[in-house]
Length: 173
Image 1 (cartoon, rainbow, N blue to C red):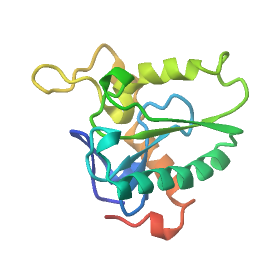
Image 2: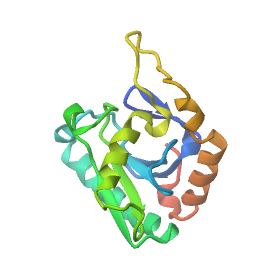
Image 3: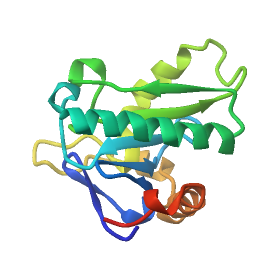
């Protein structure tokens, strides 16, 4: 998957994408909350859930279901947290609809809902994205970038995941 994919105002390298359907794509995170935490997004840049077409909505959730089955098995999870934050007051920081899929295991958090606090703090950095300053430039606060996974690590994970899907879901654009 050598193409780049739009994610809001940002680009996701094809090497970080492991799944592509007719209208959606799945990609790895630069700073996952848990191992296996991935994102699923429509190919078309759509800011809000309400603005998805019926076909995009169906494809996004069908893709999320297909990906979820593989992620749960691959990461030896017993459950999944699946989250969508719709709008800035819900915690959405990238203006592009996306679904978080997080493989869960017993006692991965002391209190089960702690994952949402962790996810909220994480949102600023998903897929290597930080808040933009007034000049629309990436604002690296402190050593934030130092905590990101390397492109090599992300490409390895995406490559491993890509092999778990039928060819129909892994062909480039």
